[in-house]
Image 1 (cartoon, rainbow, N blue to C red):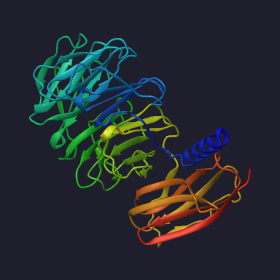
Image 2: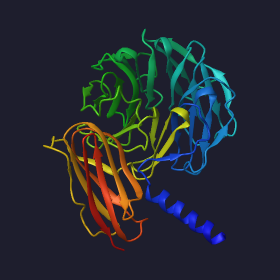
Image 3: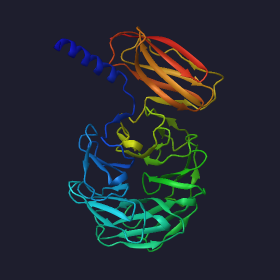
Image 4: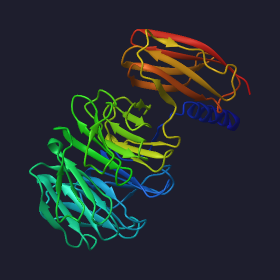
Length: 408
């Protein structure tokens, strides 16, 4: 009996590992919607969501625990200026603070802002919040006192604090405001859109991006600190990305509805769609620790993690091919990595899977929507045994299968 159980366990580990995706689902242990995620290292981070829910991990998400927020209000945003001091903000003027790395949280209020959408601190004491009715709050004593001022009639949804004096905020109707003197003056910037700006991210003081909600995914870019904003290629056709995070000046990740995860490595000239393993989840927050390690959170306690930058599938050309094509993998035979190229002539649902010689599915490499173009997938079969395998490309009106040989 023990040998039989061991064999079943080995099979489970084998097929679980073989089907490894570029973004792996983690067990959050909660069903609430999660709105934001923030990490101070590859292993230590927090997520927040509905009903004052705070999750934390110290082992890269292998285990997520819960911390007591002392509020039942939804928490929308996280800022940790240091390893021990952190802040979260949310509904009903709520702000919660920790000074011991989340072991305990104290709840407070930002009087004058009914919904505090985002928080960003320059250091442990000086920080800013933005929220409903176009209001900005500033503190210089760790949140004990907030100075609140209304700078526009539109709700402010997102902001980023570069340092104690330089802050940029954006929101409804495409409004963007920036201060360079610690909030004494807020200067309006021309965003180039009238749509709802839901997320803004800067790689440095000059290079930044924002995403706006609309008929398609709208992203705009600045290279001079927001003085000018220019459109980049639309990442896709959902109603808009909910969150952006810049790894550097040219590499940006985004997350949104329908399990959407996008990446650009050329300042938005082209975007690739990365498989999230779920085409229905509403993804709300994304945080890249570095170019390889990142986390995404969303509705119903959804948490995803990548340790390879999500790079499995890459769009290598945006030229529209004449028809569907699944190329022979190269090299073949291979050990353990091989390249799979395919072409799709129109946007739609695409599925790329691998089967063993018995017809059993051993890996789902991609299952989601892609725009027209030519794609490459680097398939790593290091967890598979030597043998004959088949890979299949499926779309709305196309199916093709090819054989490949793994020799170790």
